[in-house]
Amino acid sequence: MAISVLLVDDHELIRQGLRRAFERDEDFEVAGEAASLADARKLLALVDPDVVILDVRLPDGNGLEACRAIRAEHSEIGIVILTMYAGDDQLFEALESGASAFVPKNAPAEDVVAAARHAAASPRSFTANDLNEAMKRRLSPTGPQLSPREREVLDLLADGLGVAQISRKLFISESTTKTHISKLYEKLGAGNRAQALMTALKLGLLKREEPGL
Image 1 (tube, rainbow, N blue to C red):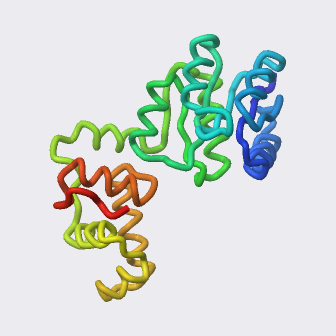
Image 2 (cartoon, one colour):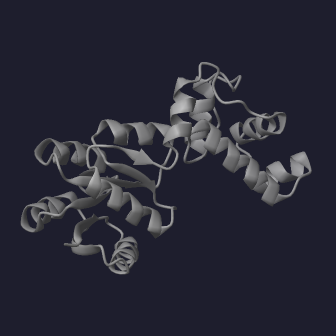
Image 3 (cartoon, rainbow, N blue to C red):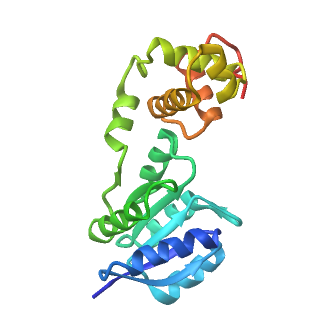
């Protein structure tokens, strides 16, 4: 029997993309779509899916809180959390909420399908592509190790400079600047500038009372 999937996301284009990805795989069938938690609750009772693909930010609530509620009532259902903000805090919150998998929205649709396959087979075990590295970052007493250039870029980000301004100040290309910023986000477990600066501040990597967000 095909694995039935319920798609819960308020962006129609994302739902359409996921639907096509699941329909290309003969192991799956899309049992329904919802743009809100209210609709998701109704469909959950009607279609009894094997897996729920659940966005974190929905117009009528938080997907992680919904995940806890679903897990409390449906111990064997698979739950895949989708999010635009894929930092370590969000990853561990998804783990603690009882999710089966955690996937950033910028990941390929095939990653969501793979996560759903895992969720259907092992709903109570957790997977995420960055889980091992996130665990290392959480357990490391010294925090992330930044290169001298990454520290320079971090300081300039804290000063409120953009990519073009940082590139001119450091005499490097915008492509190289973007690579440094991407590495910084990865090491800090952040999904955007604000998260990166707040994490850096907590870890003592910035000598400021407040980062320039």
